Amino acid sequence: MAAIRPTEATTAPWWRDAAIYQVYVRSFADGDGDGTGDLAGVRARLPYLVELGVDALWFTPWYLSPLADGGYDVADYRVIDPAFGHLAEAEKLIAEARELGIRTIIDIVPNHVSDRHGWFRAALAAAPGSPERELFHFREGRGENGEIPPNDWVSEFGGTPWTRIDDGQWYLHLFAQGQPDLNWAHPAVRQEHEDVLRFWFERGVAGVRIDSAALLAKDPALPDFVKGTDPHPYVDRDELHDIYRSWRAIADRYDGIFVGEVWLPDSERFARYLRPDELHTAFNFNFLACPWDPGLLRSAIDDTLAEHAPVGAPATWVLCNHDVTRTVTRYGREETGFDFAAKVFGTPTDLELGTRRARAAALLSLALPGAVYLYQGEELGLPEADIPRDRIEDPMHLRSGGVDPGRDGCRVPLPWSAGEPYAGFGSTVEPWLPQPAAWASYAADEQGTDPGSMLTLYREALRLRRAEPGFAATPGETSDGRLNWLPSAPGVLAFTRTHGLICVVNLSGSPAPLSEHDEILLTSVPLDGSGLLPDDTAAWLRRKR
Ligand code: NOJ
Image (cartoon, rainbow, N blue to C red):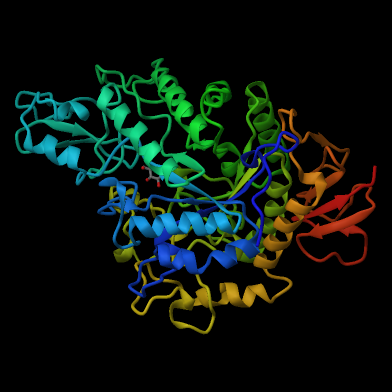
């Protein structure tokens, strides 16, 4: 049985250098055969996650939901959606994982609820101006008959973020229509979320991922958005920090941690969320979106470490998640960065090249100081799938009038066994999203016995990351194990960590010499004996001190 890493004073707290695996429950494994992944499926696959070598699981929302946005439309935070299981089963899963050395992080979506949430239903049933409506942002429309939305904001999923109801009022939803925004100026909204946090911490969760963490607070006047307005009417408002300080006080009572979904280009503003009495960590989207380019990657790494150092927070390293294009597809394209606005159908990709780069990127991200997030299927090297248009469920696609391909291509049910129906996902009927014909060739069972597979690479890298002192976070060091760049050829990234680990990544376009070393620990592809590192590959080396 794997042991939970100790957290005595001599060791940095677990979350500062953890490897955290994102479980998109609906597509992880189907325990009851109905076509949808569920908690029974996750419980059955815990040994796989132990063998993979991760420290924690982040579960995307598993609560009661009509799935207007894949579960990010929550109807009840204290109920597990029956498609996934039930509360007692979630408690069992949390406990079983913990027994196996794996902690649980849940996903809380404070910006909005589902339009089926009891509060919103009550608000619809109540009159304009009622206390029930005050929990949300209801307003009269503009124009002679109130037929124009109350302001000019644009939904994160496109179109107006306002929907008009029968009595003529409009309600605000920064995302889909089924996701009404809560009014965070209302004390009951704060109270409820604090209770929800306690509810889940009491059930043994070790952490909480905060959805859309920089969007909750709104300018109460809900003014039109004039570009350049400071403060922004709904992004990164100062009021948020007070909310997160009170959340932190709750988490501290349970030794729990937060990871915020904070998309902000301004690194100084970003770091404010990570002050010692606010969130422990936040996702590093600048690194995630960074093109496969040596100069840009090096800057992204330097900027990340520089922005975290003053607040003493560890960085997180993320290559992909349930919202973005799968890494092997992205890195095989001409444009290797990620940008929501640039997504179109039919972008050509070279999967062989993308996979080679994704292997190198895995060793890069797993060698950097801080915590690392892996998204289910990343360890199998899954590409982005083409989903037939009539099967796409993502509101990002639907609200774009069919122009944006949406995010379902990275949410396809996992292939577990090559020889079984639906690649061993566990379903006896077709899964909720169709799997591409080649899916079985990525199956975990066959990759597990193939020394050259992506799964074997991830297992070995995660094993070394735990076992090698060179990767350890050092208590008291704000950067969690320093990173020093080593001299290297142009286009080659080479750095060393505090205890003698060296990581070299070659993006130069031709074979490059390895940095001075005593031992090769791991390479993203086998070396050919020339002593050179091929293009688009990475190596972990050890130097005795
Ligand atoms: C961010 C989540 O990651 C995404 O999947 C979701 O659509 C939005 N927040 C809205 O909740």
